[in-house]
Length: 289
Length: 95
Image 1: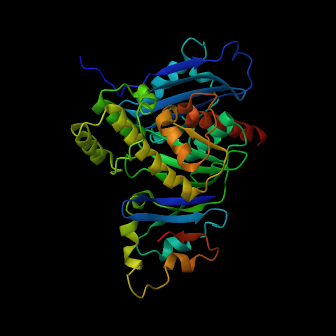
Image 2: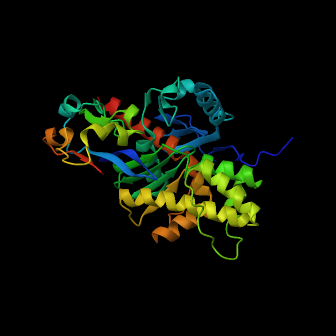
Image 3: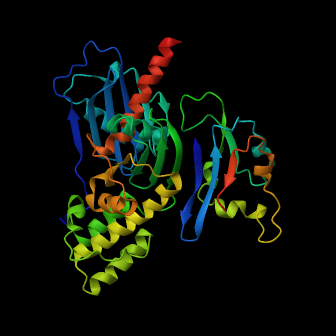
């Protein structure tokens, strides 16, 4: 079997030494993205468990699978979860969700939890779109911009390159620095044309690393334009899968002259985490009447 | 919140921005737009806002450059109906 270089590792996590029994509020957020699905469970507003896996061809199934996996081994069951928020591309297809909220609102809220109230500019680099968000200290969105018209600057584009160059996707960031000097970015922003261009560059004798560097830098340049429109502030964070690719993140930092905050949690769960936080706030609102 | 709807591509920046703090959800923009670009709904990006708000409808977001063409002739461009009609000055176009 040929190796699938684009395939990134799926993961799950449970908080050590934390019990859900006796908790007042248990909420969940499910982020059904175009490429990955995450499920986050909060117990009294604290992170209890999460799972991150690939979205299949069926959104309701993906949502259910992610949820099941997050609950696995915890003894917690779906009926104990008081409120679930669905978010992401497939948010209306989460059968057990009480409400759907856009991923823009959820990412902002999730990043606020992950990075603390100081974070003001968030760049979410998702599987098939890219969002620039400006928010206040409570994680409320104050401006946003979304590019979902094409795959440039998204995880899917990176997957295409991983496959083309036979480089495991997790190694791309590191390899992109194994070059003698920074090449100019690939000129095409369109993933399909960029792939064509890369094939040409390989034929000209460019090394894999150099092509990767040129693509990472094109991607960084592309998203920086979005950030500039939204208003860039120093407290800046990247969420989503691409946040794990230092080849892109470092180049964004270089271009804007700001260092991104260091994530304390898996950056891919930001949306689902935000959803679960909204779920908690909505339960509390209901209880207040 | 400044909600930017539209996109940026090789041909330029095509965004309609709605300032949701100014928008009161009156729906006048929905009535005057010849292409029905706007709709008034519950704020999709702020689950706690109770007042409705104008948004650019989903179907137009990826082709806004073309949709708005009819109101934007190259010469003698008249004031845009959506901008003129909005009393709270919540709507702006990037081009």
